[in-house]
Length: 110
Length: 113
Image 1 (cartoon, helix red, strand yellow):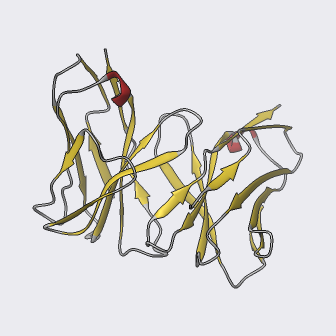
Image 2 (image 1 turned 60 degrees about the vertical axis):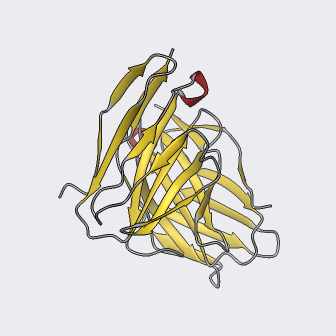
Image 3 (image 1 turned 60 degrees about the horizontal axis):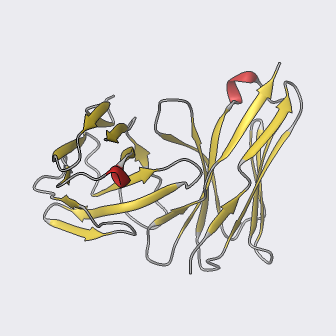
């Protein structure tokens, strides 16, 4: 069945790079997404990548996609305390609905 | 820019009570969704709608009902609340299905005791 897996927790120091990893199962997914959830708020779309791309860069964010291994990663350069949040990976399934991972809590220490 | 608005923000229910979680969007989106979020479990789709008058079940529909009489509104009804329905509920909308990004409300935190 469709499944998206993420590690649950990542802790980094301010100024370091953060790398959040995700694996998915539906090879027919056309888009893969990263959403950010701050405390007490809903999810906000951070970035996305089309399945025919290997990499997408958007300011401090770099998304890498390895279709062969069904592996997606989000790299945040120069991580700031304001980046502390839960990050969700999601794929659009062949039924057209988004399947979310469990979320990775990113803790940024000053 | 209101986006997706959910009410109430918090609610405590006793077992067996019922309530309606309200959701409205002002972006003229066709697709609307209800998710529940449990710690460490990600988001699970409860119900969704592809347009006014059309609703369909998601992964975890049992114990819930929805209606979509207008494009803007997509209320979620809980009948006979149970402790297993303690969760944070998110409403979301998108212009279309497939790869269209979702816009989320800020959630309703529901506790059933």
